[in-house]
Image (cartoon, rainbow, N blue to C red; front, top):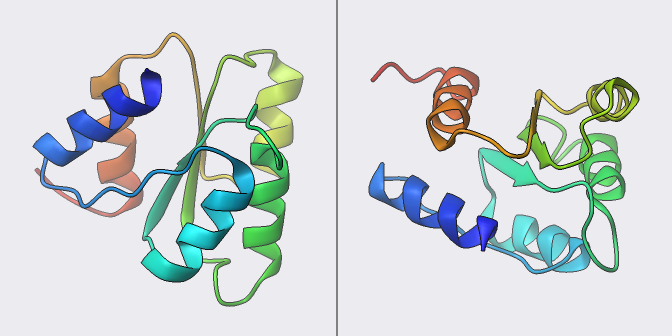
Length: 112
């Protein structure tokens, strides 16, 4: 449900959005879609968000992709771990969709 909310909000703002149901699909979509930014949940089936982030940041072809973790894992240790893996931002659930949008705009260097 949150994935659909994020998708709809971003599409309404004019972003092209691709979604994935698990970490393996996310990595496959990156190869096909070449995104500028990825919103990842920490807790995903098959490969969790941390592993997806780690693999993307370890690959020179994908290391520059901006990554935002959007997660219910809100302990300071979780946030710091995500940032240490190379994520550009970490937003905890429940979240304000406007906050997510502003972070995306900031990371993409957009002025709206």
